[in-house]
Every structure is written in structure tokens, then in C-alpha cells.
Image (tube, rainbow, N blue to C red; front, side, top):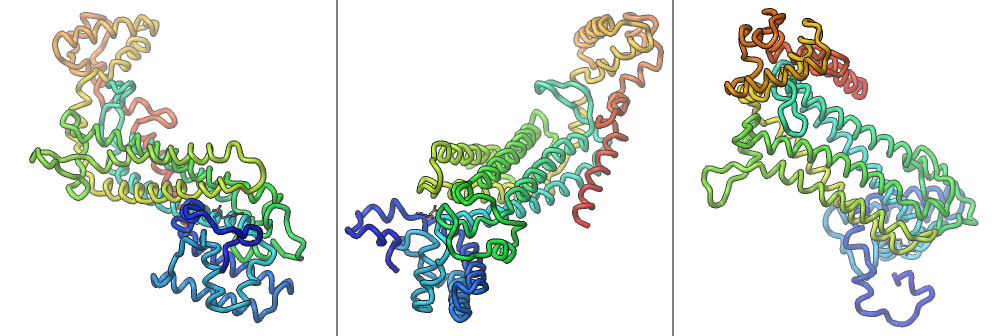
Length: 462
Ligand code: ARG
């Protein structure tokens, strides 16, 4: 099959042109979508009497054979064919002869590539949602076991107030829930068919775009052909959604790395998800979360790259747009393996409640409760209570003890109105459970959040 360019250009091609111009080396990833799209297209053409049923049947059986050849690894992707669309059309010609030439009636590679790529992106929106759902289930299972497990909640990476570990996990569940919603919103918005837009202006043939869209599982057809063949917003959306999700994963990974250090020891990754040092025999390194954090860089890069490619393009299709695919393939692949390995590593991660509890005994986590006590029980204005608490904290520091461990007599030296109930008030568990406002850390509030996420999941499953 001669290259499309032969319609107008006749002179021999420069040697480097094939290598530079071709996309087959990467867009072969779209072979299933391309074949599926072509089958729907010829069905529509036959229904509209644009081609005969005989041609349709021949084309479809040829395309199915090609699909089989590719699956069996018997298909030769030739760089001379430029891209997956030309490659399949060329192979079809060899398999069925002249009928193959009818397949490209009333379409262009511009709407064809827009279709294939959009279907690929939509399919992966769904796949990533499934993987995110598994991750959320894993986190909920961990959370269920730790609604009373105390650890220091931090701001500025400094001990702030006591929280429970389930509450911390549910913060990530909240992020991953929004990620799912973003992938689903994108799916709904972009689930319209581009096929039938042809090169840029529609087609004089009496096509039935709605029928073709239905065959391919779209909710409808795009509105304006000029926009459709130059629209890559759907690709930008998956890149942004992945970048945001990977940013969440990266923040989580950072905490796992910190928590795995000797200073924290809050968690320990299982040996199956850790590596060792080539020189230091005692080392167990958290390579998995480090790579999760590191891979965030490339998915951010992919988003910026495509935004940059698109920003100056006049309507409609320009070859620059061929640069849209590799970044998306890379981000999808990166997100897929990242979600899989994160869920698996979390399932086998051990959680060291003792180390977490130990850590809560440093940093005067219940100092706010002392200030609140002075305010509510001893008649202080909050700012005065805050100041006196600061003095008590400084005193505790001189004794190398935590505010929660001072005895009544010591506290009464600062304020005689303090009563024995202060001892319970300053206990870390009491402090955590005092924060029972909606969305707070108290075990009862955490349990409500857990229930919310479980209901949300079961409504989706059902
Ligand atoms: N390989 C091309 C791409 O990925 C397909 C579309 C080519 N269209 C064209 N008019 N040259 O963008």
C-alpha cells in the first residue's frame, strides 16, 4: 500500500523521513481500538448503502484475522507504513484485495486517530478507577483495625495533637475518592464519538454517526467536527487526573518512607516489597515508596509536555498532535503499576502501634487541651490560658517530661483552680476523643467516616 503522501508528492522520500515521521513504533498500542473502530465504520457504511454487504463482510473477516495475527505475535509492524492506521489498511489489502480500499470511505486518519486515542483513554479511565477502588478497600481494611491506635498528628512536621491511625488513613481515602470522581467525570464528559468528522469539515456521504457511536459504546456524538479532530482535552484530563493522583500517592509514599526510618519505626514494609543495600548488610530500603514518589516527576512532565504541544496549534489537525500519545501511554502505565504495587505493599505492611504510642508521649500533644481546660473550667480568656500553658510546657521541658505526665500538684502550682479531672483531660486518648466534631479524629467520628466510605463503596458495587 503506498503511503498516503503519494496522492500529491511523487519525489522519493528523504531517508530520515520514515524514522522521524512514523508513529507506528508507539501507536501500535492502539491496534485493538483501530480494528474495533474500522469494524463499526464498515458496518455503518454498509447500513447506509455506501458499501455493499459483501465488501463489509470481507473487510470484517480480514480485520479479525489481523487482530488474531497481532495477538499471536505474527504481525509485522513496518515503519514504512507510518502509523497503525496505515499499517492495518495495508495488511488488509494484502489479505482481501481491492475491497480493503473501500474501508476508508467517509473518514480520515484525523477522526480515526481521534477515535482510537479517545477509546484508549476512556478504557484506561475505567481501569484506573478499578485499581483505585482496590487501593481504597485496602486502606479501609487497615483503618478498621486502628480506630483507637494513637499517633502524633503533625503540622509543619512537628508534633501537634494526638490522632488515631485510622483517621490518618481515611485522609488518604478521601483523596483517592476524589481521584476516582475525577476519572469518572472525565469519562462522562468525553464519552462522545469523534468518528465521522472526517478530515475537519464532515463528509458529503450520508453517514450515520449516531449508529456508529452506538456500536462503539459511546453515549453520543461530538458536536463540531472542526473541534473534534483537534480536541485532545480528553488526553489532558487523564494526564492531569493521573498527575493529581500520583501527587497524592507521593505524599503518602513520603510518609511511609519517614515512618520506616529508625527515628519513627511506625511501619515496616514486608521483605517482599523492600530492597537491601549492595554494601551495607543491615539495610532494608523503602525503594517502593521512593519510586512512587519519584515517578510523580515523569507524570507531571507528561502533562506539561502535552499542554505545551497543543498551546499554539491552529485548527484543525496538525502533525504536532502525533506527540500526544507517548506521554499518555507512559502515564497510564506508570499509574497502573503504581496503584498495583502500592495496594500490595500496604496489605503486607506491618504497623507498629507501640512505636506510635511512644511517639505521642513527646511534644506535649495535649497542650491545647490544657489551654481549653483553663478557659472552660478556670475562667481564663483563651489568650491568657494559652500563655500560662506555654509556661507549663516550658516547665515540663526542664523536667524532660510531657505535659500529659505532670501530676496535679505541679499543675496547681501554676493555677490552684485546676482540679483532679485535669489528669484524665490531658491523657492523649481523652484528647483524641475530645475532637468529636464532624470530620474530627475522635474514634466515634472516625467510625462515622469509615461507615461513610464503606457505604459509598457498596453503593458503587451494587
Ligand atoms: N499518526 C497520526 C497521529 O498520530 C495519525 C493522523 C495522521 N493524520 C494526518 N493527516 N497526517 O496523529
